[in-house]
Amino acid sequence: MKTAIITGASSGLGAEFVKSVIKNNNEIEKIVVIARRAERLKSLKESYGDIIYPLPLDLTSDAFAKTLEETIKKENFEIVLLINNAGFGKLGNFEDIGAKDNAMMVRLNCEALNTVTSICLPFMPDGAEIINTCSIASFAPNIRMATYCSTKAYVMSLSRALREELKPRNINVLACCPGPMDTEFLPVANIKRGTSRAFDTLPRVNVAEMAEKSLKASKKRRAVYTNKPFYKFYRFVAKLLPHSLVMKMART
Image (cartoon, rainbow, N blue to C red; front, side):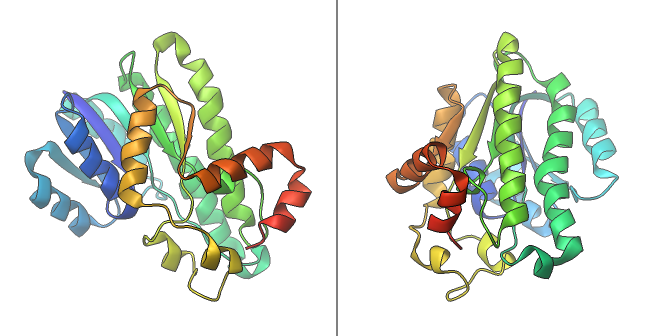
């Protein structure tokens, strides 16, 4: 059964990925939606029908990997599309964010993504696609988002390296790099008007457009997709200039 697996599917970009896959990909017979909030996944099934396979999992737990692998084997899923979208961030000085949230960002944004990909790859045919939700935060480190930027730099590095490794199997790996979006990410990250000059002024990325264009970029076998000319320019500048200077320019 040709299957898509989407983590962080309960809201925001993940939910838009679900909608866009259903709209644009006729070959996929089942979409496994993964998130902690079972009621949100149930709502997706009610909206889209039997194509949705809800799989409530906490990707920061120790038990999720076994459940995921057993489910894939039991249901005989052939994973033609994997979207690693689960993640979160926190705005604040490293010391103020504290050990728990700093560690949880690493665990969800890096370790869980790595584990999900490792589990899914043996069940992916040649020509499959992987989309990793990265961020413009991966382009350069930034103060007050030290851990989050570092986790997204990891996602970018892993995506690029894995893409090269998987070329013999024609499995493309795309790092999609949105700028700020009006989703649940912002309140979870403690970002509201007045807490960050940068976030107050940066242009917002349309969530539905980001999902749809990322899927199109993946089909074109691209390595990185960044939405909006402003963020494409930032990506170029972050490559060109020393990061010590970029951090001063992009203070949050």
